[in-house]
Image (cartoon, rainbow, N blue to C red; front, side, top):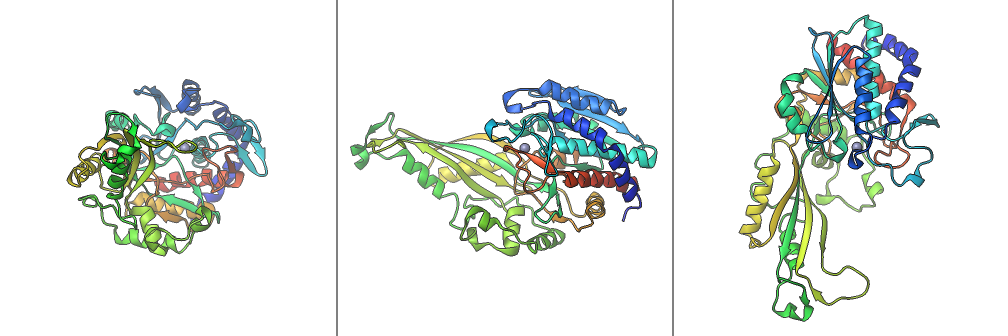
Length: 451
Ligand SMILES: [Zn+2]
């Protein structure tokens, strides 16, 4: 138990209305990156909140939206990096919002508004924690660095090159990630990794133009070519059949296996939620969680071509396309995986199918042996009075690779969302007690690093 827990909780309670006012200012800026709205205003608002607290701030440009950078605190202390984003998802369909999306409305013990959970609530938790620590300690015990990007909701296309260019300004001993929260039981989740992704389009063309389907007796069909090519990528239980696909997969450590075993004891309701009879490979218990945490996979996102309208059209289409994504784990490399896909297709007689890489992000995972992980776990325990669930990795993707490989900083999640937060959807919200606990747990990470 951290001896500062109760003092920090009391300081946060005293500062609560000030922080709520600042939170309102953040949520009121409609910073929808995909629509290019409110970006400069959001960057200035966030930078302003940090400058008011004595941080040295810079809004650094990228090829897309700028990154808000801030440095402050005790220059001689250990450094905590906060990775956040000031952009949000669009609010449509507007009619499904109970109240105004770009405002905070308090209702049923929750704060509603776009960005409350994803992720302006997290920016506010970090700022509130710094204030509370200043009150209790009478100073900044550690050094703080903020990296707040404006393109997370469109896939962080410029963050990796930004980190490569500015790496020396963001060295740190630990990093709190931009999302986080509690599970159905209110138990805090600490996630230590993110999968990578490689997104590709497959393009097939057989005849030079659409032809009458009577020619199907002698002319091959691009949709058959695509179907056969896609079928060759995976077996029925989800194992990818591309040569060399698993070569770079980093084996799990004993501690990671133990964490996945602990996580699988918590159970889940995925089958009911998604209406499933079974999982791929009949995975259950440990194997189910191992796959979600640490198994790469391939998905078909869509196949398009020919006639899909009402009734019939006896056509043999000229072209077809398929969109695929690969979810990758350490130490797989998206470009290498796409090269392996090309080699696979050409070796299996599909050299005519064109492979276009659309996007790629590397995976990243923090070692369970890193001392920062213990600090985060202890902070969660003290704030929530519950043992946190450790996730070796999220099943999802984020820009983790440059943090793991360039900055070499251990990162972890701790935050204010819950399973009903409706991120990206109408009526996005956080519960007020979760918000308070997330502020407190962030403050306890700072107190833990100060030791
Ligand atoms: Zn999001």
